[in-house]
Amino acid sequence: MANGQHYSGIGGQAVLEGIMMRNKNMIAVACSHQNGEIEVEVEEHHGLLEGSIWTKIPFVRGVFAFLDALITGISALNFSSQVYGEDEEEEKSAPESEAQERQNKALMAVTTAVSLVLAVLLFMVLPCVLAGMLRGFLREESVLSLLEGLIRLVIFLGYMIAISTVKDIRRLYQYHGAEHKCINCIERGKPLTVQYVLSSSRFHKRCGTSFLVLVMLVSIILFFFVNVDSFLLRILTRILLVPVIAGICYEILHLAGRSDSLLVRIISAPGLWLQRITTGEPDAHMVEVAIAAVEAVFDWRGYLADEFGYDLAELDTITPEAKVYRRKA
Image (cartoon, rainbow, N blue to C red; front, side, top):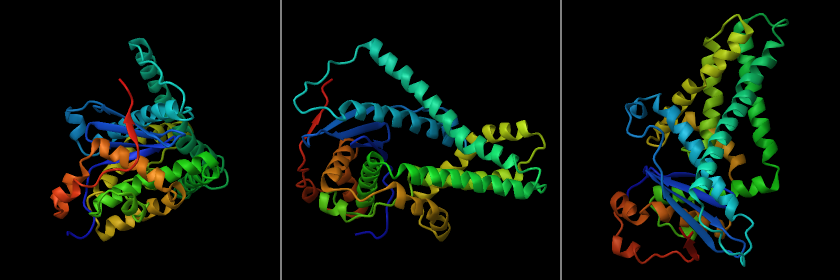
């Protein structure tokens, strides 16, 4: 067996009572019904400007990857909300009409836009405003920039800690932990079974939490060197530099998924620390849900055979125990 962690390329997120997993152009959302049955929806997804040269340019591709992650994430949450709370006796709803599908896509676009605006206002504009209120007391621009970064970090950490006290969010974080455990399990060369997944780590360097922490830290460094006299221009530069920050953070996270160097471990440390808040230890059924999502889009048996030298015939005998079914088209 090979040592260390191998890159698999899969990723995902937690949703309401479920997991979304993505591998290349395939996305699966697995959700648990109240009766314990696991429902999986699989669809092919093509990212923003897929195939365009813009998606291949370092520091630019991260902007499109970030927006695409928002879109797919909201779409997965939309599916999970349909499954969440359904009674086991209820019949499945009729297929969506084309008009309903267009309405859902429009709603998803609006939701994505509103989410972006609120995030920018809360984590970029508000710290700038609060730091600007102290300009009469602190004249040194470098000190003000560092203070703004500190305020931004405090708001972010306070927000993450506050929502972690909500019961439903804590359960969401358990599913988040199940997602990480599945990826760590196969990237460490272990068969994707409930037992092996439960024994795997719930912390992973390629995580949205790590991305958000990087955004906070990179913004502190970048804004330290970008200073303008006008208060309105300061706010404008914060907004305009958001894509630049996203592009930088994407490249750092992209590197972290493929390297285990000392520098990468140092850079990844803050994100891994925050995952102690944003992930929880899942139960066995949550792990079954996560496994169902992985198996719908990723051939983990072939991956283990290629990367770690497993006997494929032996791996083919491993079958999931949970009852899984696909949503009818």
